[in-house]
Length: 281
Image (cartoon, rainbow, N blue to C red):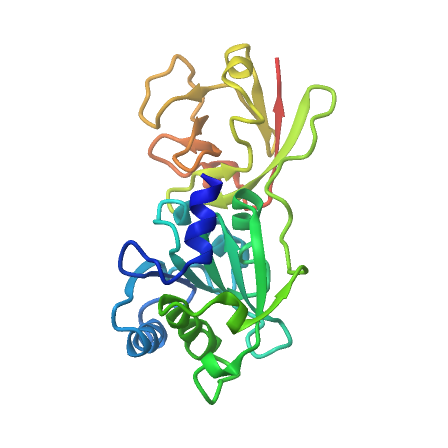
């Protein structure tokens, strides 16, 4: 697997498919921002295939962008170029960067947006984008997505090597790790890392931290003073428990706290970052 990913990353020109560029932003679709980025990419490489992950990231919400990017990127082919722009620091001294991770490319601001990707896929190389030859001039202080990140993505599509785009670095901004805290006295402290549009509370607990055997033995979760004992396989599963709130493994591989046809977040009055304590039986 590593060999295949390495080849995909280091030989960008050898696409086995039309070069794919994904876009993830907090721009919405009412303004011209997304269209302008697509126009720049296609003007520089008409063969690029552009697809949207999401443009509905809450404004300036870097953590939400990091989660959405992580949960979508692994389903794309090797050498896909992911452009992500959730950038409250645009125009400041924060660096524009390119990260190579998991056989794919990630282009955007150095503000933690790629933290979760790097936690799970492991960054192999990181570059500070400094070669203005590949930027759209003049570079706007308020729209780096159009003037830096989009043209850099087009350059990668055209076979330009990362080394030509800037200098390699080892320091880049990271958000708090996805991993739960080390278990103590049979308890593990996790947290809510995302709340989806249905009100499901996605935790940072995976099957690596909470096994099927532990759940079968009677593991529980505690959140906002509520103890959750019911674990289900899917949202509509019938259960002998009368509890409205239950736990279920979500499609992204994280344990979610949910409520049938209701918002668990509203029922529990939970926000992202809330502590979730898992206790093994």
